[in-house]
Image 1 (cartoon, helix red, strand yellow):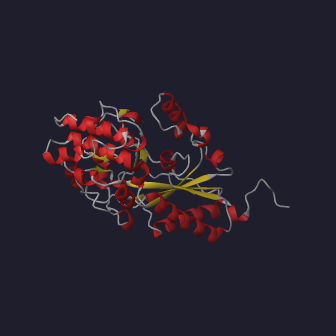
Image 2 (cartoon, rainbow, N blue to C red):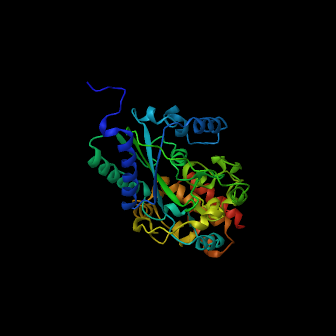
Image 3 (cartoon, helix red, strand yellow):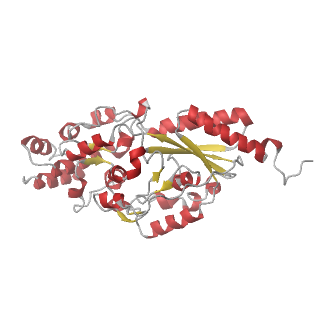
Length: 363
């Protein structure tokens, strides 16, 4: 009888160490830029999460508390989990100077650059599944689950433990050689792989991200009040955007990249070569008037396979109305807003009326 206290020959430490190196090489072959392995001890991250929730910083994102400790205890979410394989994929679609140019043009709509192309969830999930299949071919059946922001997973603390970077003061993960313009995905597994060494925080005294945030949503280093964040306001919030925050949103209609644009570590970021992440429908340079003219049929057609679709057409119009209200007055913008003044949705009408008032026209 084998000794149950001893690892099986197929899972002894030496074989697991060799397998970990193979997995990292396979990840590069599949197009990931880096892969690391973390243990499942997220005690510090859990304490920070509970404090954040206690302050109500999650706003209407009730799902952040809805899964209890399964979010911070991987083995509670997927029993038997011993390690988390964390991988990153670069997505930067254009030079950061181009983004600054778009933000400075009030007639142009700014969409967070992660959402310009196809929905990254499908891309990462399929690629991680291919990696898991390759592992299975090497070691035989093993326990695993693939995640890409699709379950209660603390992906940034896990990636930090896996050595992919550190969580910066803006709460995004930063890699010293690649900045922060990348996606994360995970494989929860029962393989006892050796864990990597966590990265060291290298933000130092820098506070560029705090100073750059248009709404001052980074209320302290490493603390984000989502209720003030433009990404939350344009994506997660379903009702009216608070009036005091609307003028601060500028031309940002879906998400916000300002904290990343301000981060000095992003001078090391590389452009993505992923075809699926390239901009579609001219969303990297479209005007506010052009996008405000999309009816629901066009919206659904042009956001098929895109992360943008999840906000729905009404929030899309709400967000663009605010941006039009923040732009300098012009007959064309007034006409575009006026055409939506009788929209069936109370939400859209309210924001259109606000925007018209901003440009000196009363509905």
